Image (cartoon, rainbow, N blue to C red; front, side):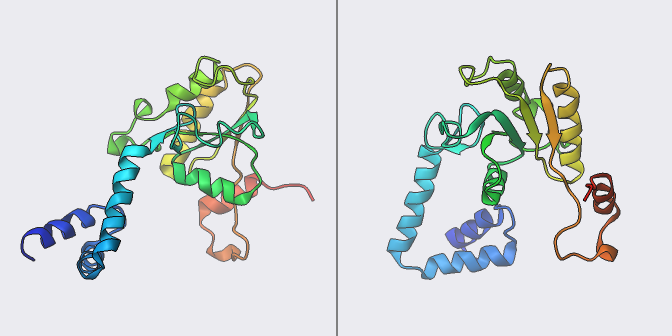
Length: 205
């Protein structure tokens, strides 16, 4: 244990996701040894993030304005909405350069063990968008919802729950991201769930 503010800094850094005790200690001593101007710049950025960054009124993505750049971009297809768990997933989809529609960020996935139910996610806002009563009710009617939650237990539970809700919307196409074997992977090392999905999602050649 270190004295006073040093230990306090290590403790606070250790609360960040993915930062263990040793990493927190390394970061803390790096900051102690850093130039005061660098520390001040980091402090200013953190303050600006908390004060100036908000969530998009339409999709829930991080934004500096009421609407994020994807919701305010008239070139994107408003009839197709990709549903993701977190803002970081928006960037993952964007890196593919294959999707030209808009997004809806749930803010997580269903996880009863962690106390996260449907009311803890932005599912109600999604239903409002589909019903034409959301903040973007002036936009074109949504024709397809692509469910792009993570391919794990929580993500699959969320996808299943959404499908049950969305199937009642007439004329709405609900699709799920395909999942299967990664490029360059060996069949023998694939787990049962991944291999099973690859088989069920096979395509004709």
